[in-house]
Image (cartoon, rainbow, N blue to C red; front, side, top):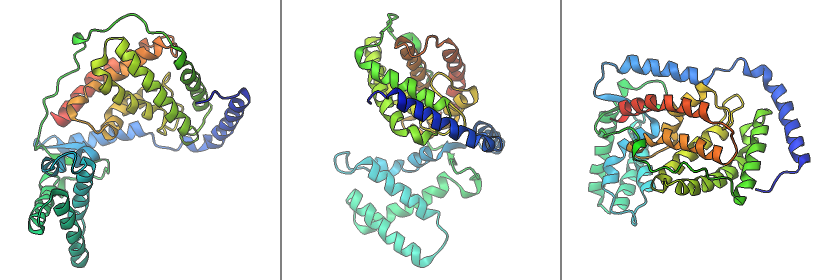
Length: 334
């Protein structure tokens, strides 16, 4: 991304300041998301404490569990993309939850049977059998009388559990030698400082969306090189993945207040681990314990690059949340 002229930076800061003043009267009446999350978690705890065979899952994770029988039937990655099978599963889930309407149901049923038969190379009779099985699976897996009002979570039967272990820092061979900024880092570091200034001056997320995405791409490229230089190449893919989700959370999500990598208020950081990452990072549950470590090393990287002079406070907060997050994920998927 090309460096911004001083005039352009000043113009955008002035515009952001005007917008901030215009919005100030609205902010006081808005409900904060983290508080709402804690309210939801309390309700979930009350409703599920006696339901040992069920657990609340983020919607997309619940859909992945629902779609598993179809995923297991896949004739091969080169034949049918997993995304297409998943989309078929979601369509069946929607169909199974529709109110009774004979004419509409028959039309939708024919479409789904045809799609299943084509996807898995089956005849129509076998396609109908698969459809019926998946319709029954919805009520078995997610009983309608147990569902809550929260659209982001579904109460799901524990038909599978994962062996989850805490991230083992002891097995890392991590170089303590700093990796200073390289010439190719100068542009994104300068742009990141500009982006922080705009956010602090009250700019809306959508105003900086393009810049944020470009910075994220360049930053993650540099982070990946840093991980390899530090001897963490074996973890680069997972660390890069979760760091990307964290950057999206910080700069591409409306928090109703200024948030930058240098300043993430505790309730907002808690919201990342208690909700955002579980909804956005669709991956194998066994990888979730890696998430806090990826963000901790991201801050070490940012300190090496000179973006932050001291990351001790942020790393300390992350270390405290790491254990809580692991217990949360273990309770959800273990």
